[in-house]
Length: 221
Image (cartoon, rainbow, N blue to C red):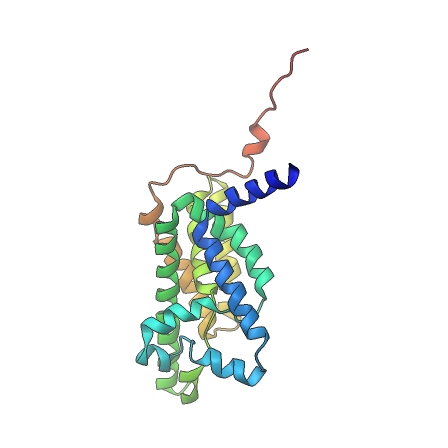
């Protein structure tokens, strides 16, 4: 039947990027939990899972993992869209292990770089000491790293236009706001670009104009 065929296609689509969809499922569950908690409870709940300076000193492994299982703004449907646009093609291209290696490198590296900048600001008096407990949860550092590494998936010359767009998108907030999360996002992009050794041997460059060169089969009467 049509319904069974559709379900088969959906399953096949999901199975080609299992890591992405497991992550999305976990984010959906945690988003539902947050939605049913009072606002003051949510703040305390997320603070325990935040990769702020205080938690990174006390239990870095725990918070680096748990912080990536909660969303800080944007809503689950928004991230579901972004995951399908960026994480799904990246996981299919790289394979689940390399995809996971890239996103973890970006998530962990950008977290320590951004919190290091914040710690320096506290030390020099540019930020309050209370900033050691600043809430920092979410998946955006990992996403930025994957967005950047996809540069190597795109054929030239489109690759350079994509890269220019990515750099402009993440550099603009850094130049105007210069918060520690802006530093983290731009650092994630640089880390993603530095992951070239993970991807240099992956085949199948993608060109946005490739479909224009694909001619439909000629039908003979």
